[in-house]
Every structure is written in structure tokens, then in C-alpha cells.
Length: 341
Image: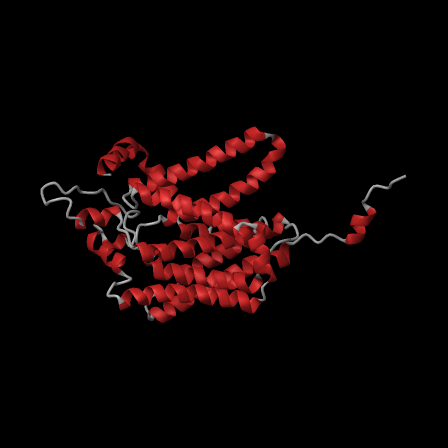
């Protein structure tokens, strides 16, 4: 593995800035704050499908990380007994390396696979009219994107190769499930109370795993301690990348989704209104997150995070289409039909 990573470092060192840009761009947290909300300004229907797929994929990723509890390379190399003091390699680190969650499966790859799958499916559908060559080109771009993300994650010592591969495979499987029309229709037929009950069930499963590990003497926060122990600079560590924070963020968005429900049909949006509105909301959300109360206790910190993600997800699904939907007068539609002689 380290021979392979040494080859990566040698081959891609000149492209380090580009690889850093790739891994930052496809950070699940960044996707939630930038690219995914922009989709809400383009189409409420696509945003609904994308949001559902990404949320459930991230929940599944979090659950598997806790269950599998695999090391990340940057602390495994310091903890393993496969090396001695004399031959233990020194891994290159920077602020992108020190993530405090377990390594398997890769959250970057799992979430990005889902996100890109939805986006490229929409582009393929639009590109069919231009022939198969466009579809083939889009699929090549899709696989190249996943390859680049994998290389960037291994280059910075965040993941092993198998963790990236598993992340991609599970991302594809989850997307095929959550994007199926039958699954969306099933959720649509549910009452709001029942959808909220399913949200509670997901949270209960995660709580059971968390406290079950404690019951068996396993510290659910062991990966955070490993990251603090072996990260060259503790200031590299970001609390928003911990599993507990991710669950709070996801739950806020999922509750909003459960309240509104899947959007199977939506009126087209006037982009002159929807895009500026979405950009304004994104800016306000960034500011609100930057002013998160971090020094008033964990409960306040998590409640604030939960509320921010619930509020803005609800607004993207309800407020944007309410203000920016194109209203077509049915009388105009009838009068615009060609007359048949």
C-alpha cells in the first residue's frame, strides 16, 4: 500500500494544488452549502431527488463508519505493529489529511458518487437528443471525476484504496435505490407523520449503534482521539467533520424533507428570480454557520446546527418555488394550441 502511495506522491506532487481543489470541492459539507442549494434554484424536482439521495447515502455512510471502525492511513501507520521504530514511514500531512472520522467507506467518494450520478443522469437525459456520443462523453467525465477524487483522497493520506472503491460501489447502489420512481412514490403516499416517524427511526438506529458500542466498551469517538493524537497540527482538525456533527446536520435537512415530502412534479422556475434568491439564501446560511455559538455548550451548538439546516432546506424546497415558479395561465395554454381544420 505504501509503495503505491509513494508512487502517487511522486507522480502527482506537481498537481498537489489541483488535487487539493478537487478534495475541497467534493467535501460533503461544501456540497451541502454550495452546489446542492444551487440546484434548488434551477429545478425543485431535481433538488428533491438529489437531496433525498445524498441524505440517505450520508446516513448509511455514517452508520457503516461506526460499525466497520477502520483506520485512516495517517494514524494507522503510527499505530500498527507492522513497522518498527527504524522502518516506520512518515506520511505527508496537511490541513486536508486530518479528518476525525473512521476511514471506511470513504464519505467523499460515497456522497460524490451519489451527487454526480444524479447530475450526470439529468445531463444524459438532456443530451440524448444530440446522439450517443454525448452520452458516452458524459459517462467518461463521470468516471474520471470519481478517479480524480479517489487519487486526491489517497494522495493526502485520508483513505486506503479499498475504502475509496467501497465508497464508490455503495454510492452507486444507494443512488439506484433512492432515485427509483417507485421509492419516491412510496414516500409521497406516506403521511407527514409517518415520514417524520421514519426520520426518528433512523436516528434511533444511529443512537443504538452509538450507545451499543459504549456498552461493549468501545469508545464511539475513538477516531477523534486518533486524529488528535497523530495529526501534526491540531488546528487542522475541523469539528464539523465528526460523525456526530454530520448526524445533526443530516437530521435537520431530513426533517425538513419529511415535512415537505418528495417533489414528483414542479412548475418551472424563473431563473432570473430563483438564482438570485438562492444565492442570497446561501450567503445568509454561510454567515449563520460562521456565527455558530461554539462556547455555550454542546446542546446549544447542536440545536443551532440542527435548526439552521432544517430552516434552509425547508426554504429551498418551499420558499424558492413559491416566489420563483413560472405561473402559466391555462387560458393562454388553450388559446395557444393550433387549430385543427
